[in-house]
Image (cartoon, rainbow, N blue to C red; front, side):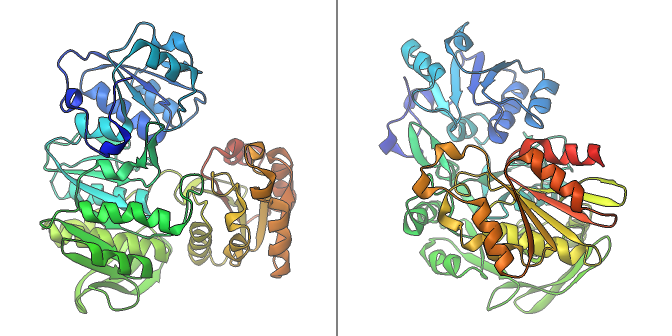
Length: 484
């Protein structure tokens, strides 16, 4: 196999430092991941013949790829590399023991990871704006891309969700900036460093730092080492936009070689949001710069976590000299993102929302925001602890305090539990008991079929059903709406 040595970090192998002229056919292993599907679209737009394989082919990425007329091969195996492609992009879901990866090694086909490929095929020649942190990356990336788009800067971008203001979650702009969601998850089986180290940040936004990805990081210190590397990558001529409400970020931002601008809702920060008011259609707020009024803002987003995301966008737009009137219109016309407090439908007076929340903090803040938005309606919080970290018992106790603002809580047994050792396994039934001890109404279900029945038994007209998972959740949203 031809790729970089793991000690070379983000440096590309010399033979792939630029786009080789003889590459025609590129194959992507693990193509239905959000990032991989986006890269496939970028490569197709660049004029390459693109194919891809994946074990699980499902919407929305499968629809995106079908619309791009990119052939999808279900399952992994040697046959997927026949005819032999000129280059293979290996997603981080692929292990070195994957049969297709074994064949890739046998055939000595050149290959890259997703972040390496993005650097070569999408980001060359542009200044990168990297949005990183445990929470809020997708929303902030989408807000920034939309602000720059409305500001006439024609940015390129790749985002880990589907922003409704654009046709998809990637774009090859001709402007000077590329907006990229900087993920701290590992890159590939041959590069265990985080993806964001490959993106050469000129500007970085740090939204939050909490322990996550327990399958990758041993502890908080191990995680911090990755973020410290990212901070050190920002050049002295660049900028770090840091959430000043996060004490970890405040401490770590002192390592930056570049200027640091802080934002938040409280504390001693450069930029602050105040007079926040959640109305029926919009959230309004006043933005202060160095305690002087900068502008008033309206946005369809709601919840303090989204106000923080908006604040970081305002700082970046100000830095890049986007006119305030243009910025104001961009934030007001922001269309949201699929699977982020997304309205999936309303039947018989019952509103069904979809959200990606899975970390205890994200679950808590999402519930608080939804309850504030729909305060006169009963809130049913349905949560699937599906992520690699959620299925471990690391946050077993912390989750119990995440649901306090919900009226009813329903939690199923998560899938793939057999992949976690019994000593480290999360318990949904125990979480339900812990929630009940807090005086809340909570229900446990052994599977999603039972869960759907439980929701239908307790739901009533006027309710808001908030469904949270980082996966498809066995298509619970569609099944619930159909049953209603």
